Length: 215
Image 1: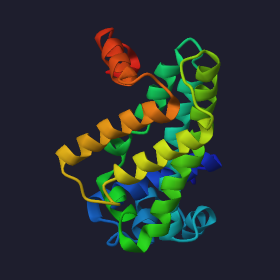
Image 2: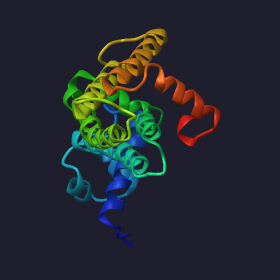
Image 3: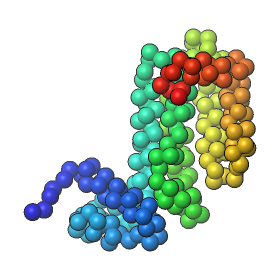
């Protein structure tokens, strides 16, 4: 008997199957027919949700972006946390690379998918900018931050972070990557008007306390 599933459940089932096949076979060697056979659905059902394999990959990217944004929103809404803690928590929530299948990341970084990569990057920047800007504005009112350009400062930090630390824009050694992370923290303090060395002191203090967002 044919199993009827809700639209979101069926769509995610297709995305899950595609990811699994992309990892085991590689993106180029995985056909739409293989995905269809794995799930046991009609070809028309697949094309109802995705017009092509390329659109399917786009759907996978959008799902990862949604995961990141939902995490960030949850942290931003925890008003019991300080501005610094929520700001850092959202930045840390961006680190989902370890959860993304390597085959997916490899395909996203290929030259033919440069527009998809740009879309993923733009999704991160446009999704997180308003959340972080609200936190900075709150911090300004409390005397924690001091800047005349809260939104622009956030945008600068996000653009630098997602491009220079992405690993695709420029190839970095581990030492070079750490240097840029330290530089980003220092630049962030300057842009946001936070006390020099304040972020590092704050992170160290909260790590010792075993705070969830500073592990």
